[in-house]
View (cartoon, rainbow, N blue to C red):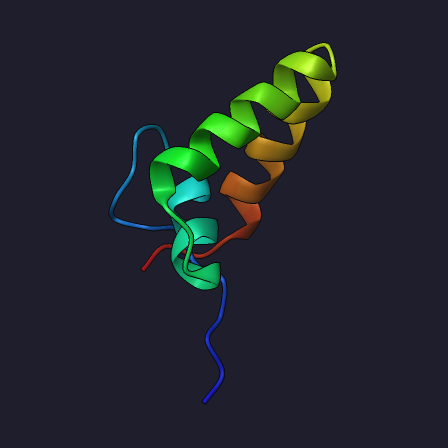
Length: 61
């Protein structure tokens, strides 16, 4: 059985980090924190851009 990557209903903004966490069996809060930390350490812009692209590309549940 193949599990595809989809946005989650467990969302704060768009469900992108929640969907990634559900796909890999991770804790959504830790996934969001890790993504936020990664975005801040990369001076913010690339993280925001990647999030917006994933928001557009990932299908909703």
